[in-house]
Amino acid sequence: MAQRQRLLLIAPCKMTHSPAFERAAALAEAMDASLSIVAFAYFETMETFNLLDTQGREAARESRLKLFHNWLDSETAQLRHQGLETSFEVVWAPRSALDICRYISVSNVDFVLKDLYAESAVRPLSLSDLDWQLLRGSPAPVLLVTDARHPHPRKILAAVDILHEDPHVQQLNDSIIETAGRLAQACHACLHLLSVYDRSVQPLADIDEPHVATPPSYEEEEALFNALADKYAIDEEHRHFIAGAAANVINTYVARCNYDILVMGTANHRPLDMLLGRTADIVLDHPPCNVLVLKPFAVGRPNDQDVSATTPNTLSMKK
Image 1 (cartoon, rainbow, N blue to C red):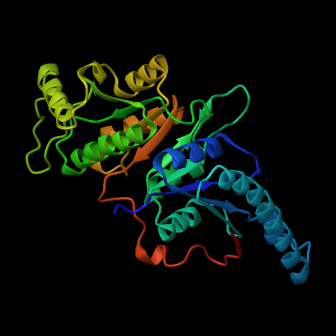
Image 2: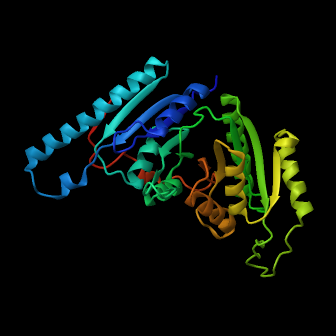
Image 3: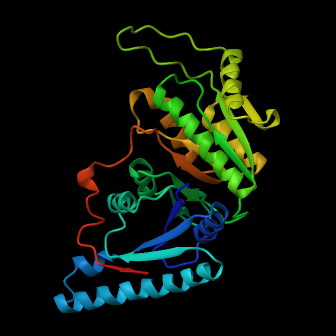
């Protein structure tokens, strides 16, 4: 019997019912997954300024933890009323990437959901420094939520990188399609596959043989793309092989065709992953829709010594 999947929602620090709540609930229902919610209630000013004595600080911590606890208790009560298996925890620890990644590691979850925010009302959604660090450090795929339109996604796009021969990138392509496929099946959504033929990109020369490799032709790379699509029985009308600058093509195509979720890979900026990392960085700078980000299997999980405990000096309230 397959193990039930677990989703983790990182709650907004402003205690608002954000789009990520709607999408997390919809995906948990569609995937028959359990949903855990964590809120980081740490308030730096309270700890760094000696405005209160020790007893006063402890009372202030308890009060803030209780405030978050009551809020999430109300939110999860509605979700449980809908028949979802939900739990939550409020922790007193900084809302830093390291602490969040430690929490993710010990929670053993399949997906992490987090809202994106615009810097102002007139600027588009963009990733904060915390978001970038979370993508690079999280041991689980991260779904960055831009909106709650169609909480059950109708159209899902898997974007793959055909050019690379690195086994890690090829494994990542497989993981992207398999993950997008499972999500599409659970949500009864249409799955589409995209790859971009970017003539501006040249394969990197081997360190021991520093010659410039001959880039594959459009036809050769399209054949590789179709072979990958055939492997996963992607309908021909749902295959999209487009020439152009990779990041621009992805952003423009996603916006034009109104995809609900883009599933793509990113890298930890190793030399072999320069294209993969650079393309993802540009796309994610201003995401065109909700984006589920995966990483190569061989990278990304923090060292055991980093995740031996959830967070340092943690106080928590659970339910």
